[in-house]
Image 1 (cartoon, rainbow, N blue to C red):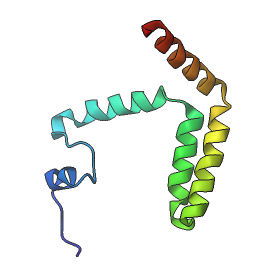
Image 2: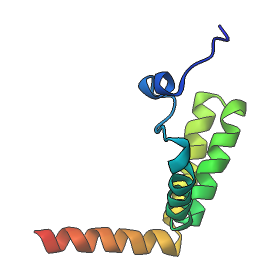
Image 3: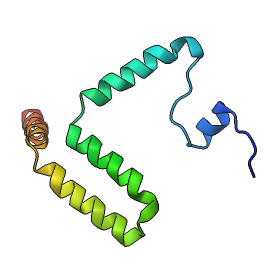
Image 4: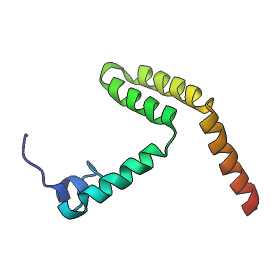
Length: 94
């Protein structure tokens, strides 16, 4: 209880998803930031909102909020573009 945890141990436990040497950290952070910037803004905003509200909802409320968020996000132009791109790519492979 309250023990310090090393980065490799946190990685092994699944608490974090990456460990980088200090000299690689800035480049790694820049690449993650670029991926986030290229993502759908409504999806990111909804995910952040849901995560921030996690502490104030019970399971049923969290599931309702997730459903509401999905309905909201799927109606955006960006979501439609992504779905069309995905389904078009699948049709080409068949």
